[in-house]
Image 1 (tube, rainbow, N blue to C red):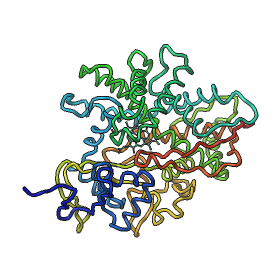
Image 2: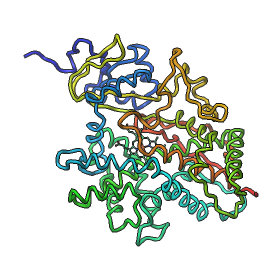
Image 3: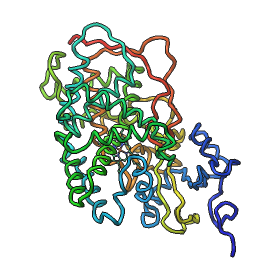
Image 4: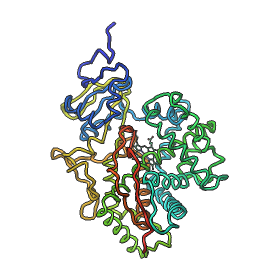
Length: 476
Ligand code: HEM
């Protein structure tokens, strides 16, 4: 018998393997500590394709975003759902929906993702607008004079409650505040452990996380749901059709809540932070919002509720650019595919690499987002980077080649986030209300907000510490 393990035997044409000296962990800790620095260092040493051993798994990184289309084209050999099916059930506590036990469920759930898009986006966006307004009015609009707050906490509490109301309605029994605050606290406890769960650390090693997760799942039992959005209704019906027990359905609902908030809250924070810390950008964006309102004949006054329809949100080009710019700076998600068989990964006419069945291929868009050859002064926030002459700017180049994948916070190909349009709209709505109703300032004596690198690979990075700010009702 000839040894063919990935440890001592590299097959012909495989990418260079970076193992690290700790047998099982490999390079996992170095990646966690500062993924961007680590990957750029490997790229300098080994070129733009290399394999890294991390926590017992071999992950082949493709560092050049102009090569992404080749990965996406290899859909037959490189599968996303194999990966999500492995990690999501263990993380959220439901059975794999792609298993042979439930034929057709996978397709039904994927069809239901369409309900977050197209014409269906309009009622969803309108509902979110009403709920954001409700939370702002209830919690923040009744006070005059300056108030202090912690910015991340502010974004979390507003977005959490408005999203919960929009997707699931009001819990039948609980009064608005009591139910939501306890749920949010549990959500945060779970979310803090999320990076461990997604890297398959067993839940029993994570203190009380299993109990917290069960509490969260139980919150979504059907009798507590007063008003599900169409997408969740359709998912519920799919589960009911396959006569599943109620627990996997409520676990799936909980996973949807996480998907809807896990990245949106930090993304909202960074968009708010960058605008508040760049008053000149904030002024331009505020003016754009006021102009869009007055073009539709609405005279803003702080006594009345604001409604921004989908068509009006589409016109907020500078605001959209500012949001995209903060996504570019803060996004650190890995887009992972699993190799279903041994195959040769062709990258253009003249290059190919041997890939083994079971290995992961990862695209890490952060390296593209911070590439100085694509973006001038890549670490700087420039609110108008994605707008040109009043229209969306889409031409970005590297080596004189126009790039298709220059901004990838929502993933790519089959695993692209189905909630991406809703996410942009709700962040626009949140910021519009904030800028219309309030004067905003950072409190003095704080250093610049930094990214918390411990969530590298998971999604939008949160700040390493919260930021204090002041806000006061504008007199209009
Ligand atoms: C998947 C990012 C907001 C629902 C994803 C993925 C990314 C992502 C990168 C793909 C994960 C992968 O390739 O492994 C984001 C960001 C958001 C956001 C940056 C906010 C700024 C939302 C919202 C919703 C949502 C608001 C729903 C209301 C989903 C779902 C999936 C997903 C259901 C799984 C898709 C599948 O299994 O094929 N998101 N997302 N996301 N997202 Fe989002």
